[in-house]
Image (cartoon, rainbow, N blue to C red; front, side):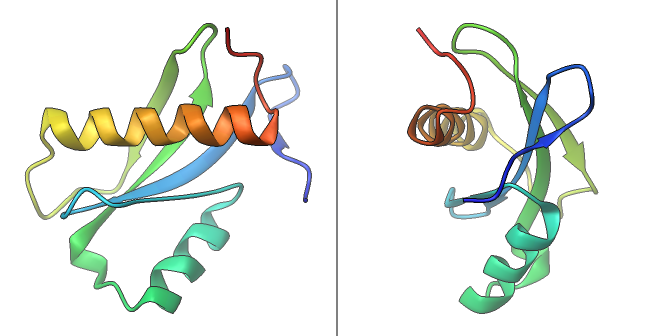
Length: 97
């Protein structure tokens, strides 16, 4: 597996997309996520891109990339965070307790 992106301070960053139907796509780069969206045939207006960083014990810091064309609810954020924590633990990127 490719090495994760890092900003020099030891912080790992990864990207993801949350769909209108609360499906999550996660990858190590923005291009990887965009290619998965294209491969699955998902319309661009039905997803919103995020940039995520692990922030310690079971916490994720996120930055919205672009403006979503649908309302992001608490359920969208909860599904995204749970999927991110699973991604981090599976790939051994962050030490989550």
